[in-house]
Image 1 (cartoon, rainbow, N blue to C red):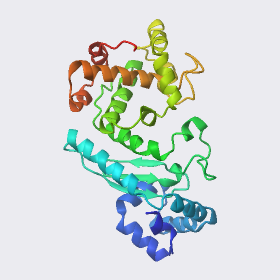
Image 2: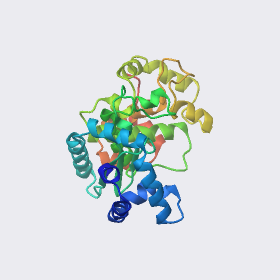
Image 3: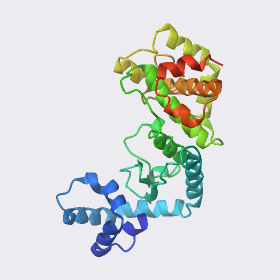
Image 4: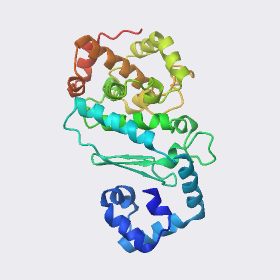
Length: 289
């Protein structure tokens, strides 16, 4: 879609584009809250004629001059999801240059990829006002796993009444297991967003990490602040160690879910349909490696 909004843009062409792509237009611009279409067009014309935005578009066009690899990877992912969930409706997929306004939109009927977010880490254009531990996950290698993980939520049944840390851990664990099942050749670091060294370090210290959860009776914790310490975004899990990566509870949940499926010989659909986190934990037989 970026070419339609940046190359030879006129008011007439803009109006035709908005009319011809209503799904994209609603998802991308619906939140802007203008009273009428005229105001929206005026703002979009100003944005996409801005010299800084034009320069960003040119840089994105140079780096993403060929997106065949992204297309092929998405097609493979969609085929994998359809194999396990034939009812899955393949969404329309659009790319765009958002001016670092939107990284990804993943809805049931459409996906929008903000290509500017996925420029190389050493590129002079980078997302602003984001911490480095999050920025480092905006790479092409993370793109498809992130999309698949987002899609997993529509198949990830959960008990909304269970507000425990364990429930959060299992929810994310199922999401990452889903993604690994659909993208079996994708390294774990691109699925969970850790550095390779953080993956190795977590496995090397899994017994100590698990011991912290057990000794502090965390699994059935319901305090939202405490839960965020273990599954929320953070550069590290300071209550365990400055060397323990953030979101360590999600990583543990992934290990528990892996063991649950393996030890109970379940299909991916059967796994995702299991909504009782306590039952998953109980039947997982999980022990640190």
